[in-house]
Image (cartoon, rainbow, N blue to C red; front, side, top):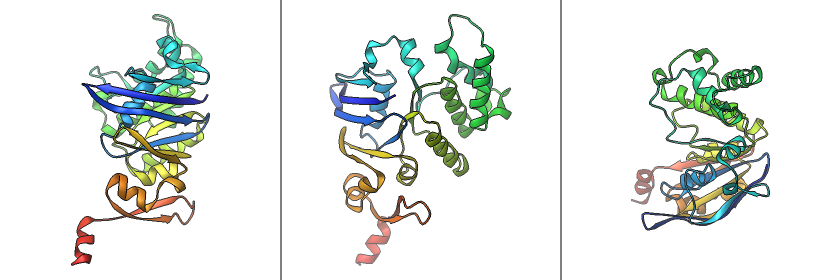
Length: 262
């Protein structure tokens, strides 16, 4: 299912956080949002999973405006892993993942056989099946993050929205998660701070700064030395990965540049 952000504008506390953001996320593709802190990335995602109502513009799922759907129907199509997605209740891992089936159940309807199979598969894919009986509050940050992604997968969405999903994850699980995103066949919109991971995982990148879209394109088109300097304020050399050919950034510490100019 295609996802389209159509001239989204968000105002909070009298301040415009997002300014007429338009972005297409084609069906089955992985599109990343990158940009400095405070550039509007998380705000855009909150509009997609309906935690925020935009002051202007709309989010479209295929030919349907998202706001026209009942919350239950929207949740059957869009699953989200937000930055602040914890729970003060000490659910077990199995119970937390099972919450992903809520949009598909009525009232206190128990999980059916297919629901249980979907949950088990999601836990296996995120390498948390061995934690099924553990309380979520006893887990490390990385383990909890993987449980939240498993919950989103169990939701069986068409569109998956993730805000910094690699936070707290070790390198092995970072790469495993991003590889999984490419294999799911879902429409994925993901916010990432690590530009090298974004280049490796995403088909397209949208760069935000000051609440506005600076540019959008393939990682090769977007991640240039000039753009990284202008938007992120850092010096970097762009090289090709020797095996995949995707662009990778080699950063230079400011102290190193200062030493060279002395």
